Image (tube, rainbow, N blue to C red; front, side, top):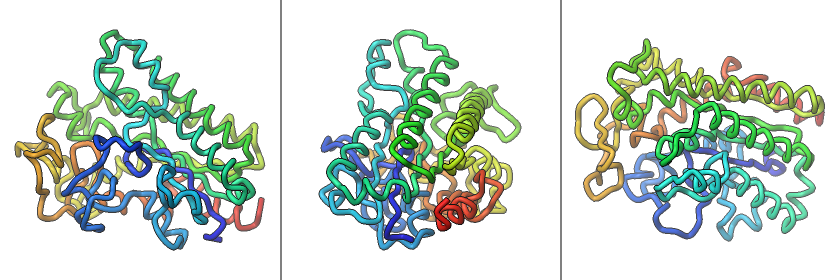
Length: 340
């Protein structure tokens, strides 16, 4: 099975396929736990998609699309870009966004995928038998909209982001994709960055930024409604929803159950205090060249992205626990193995 799987990855929490711009490259202590070097993954080690590759018994990590290895890849290609948005970059430029953000959007990644199929007949033939992993995307859209010089209503961002993602999935289905997993947003209100910026009184029952979590929850509800519609329109396809929000909530509600002692504090950060996070002294900057001694005890790595330990837990929830993937991952694989 493994030799015939292609994984399509579009995710916020990875940096695997990036332009040549050095500004997007990670530096130590990123990668310190597993790879012992920086690998352009925004974590101390492996990500959910790496654990997925392991679950499928793939022979190695998936190459990024922009790397030379992607042209001859037989087990999958990673099309992800860290910082990518669901909404096209031009939208933010038109609204006077004054910061230099990643110009790639989910539609850029779709164009790369289509180019990959054109240059690889073997990949084009395998589309109907491949597994497509569509990682979480949209959180950057909300974050960037806060920095725009003009006010952009959050419901507008939500509608546009989910609509772009739905269009993307529809394009995969039109190409013949039959086995797709779509990951929702996590508890973005529980990130140290968010909690540092949020008003102290804006807290929910697990001490996270309430309004931001509500925003992610509303996004996920709209996304799931779109997936239900796509399932009705494409009954021959298996479109699974990986419930990152519920998985993250389970960990934050009972961190010790999953081996964590620091659910809120940043492992690779500065400033100490409740979150060990300073927005102008982030992981990998000249001020922060070392990380905590035990990353496996921390949920969060750098204030925005999770530790390898957290990604391992979430991957187990997605791929082994039927409560966090709908339909269960085992059901999707069984359908795929039967060819229906």
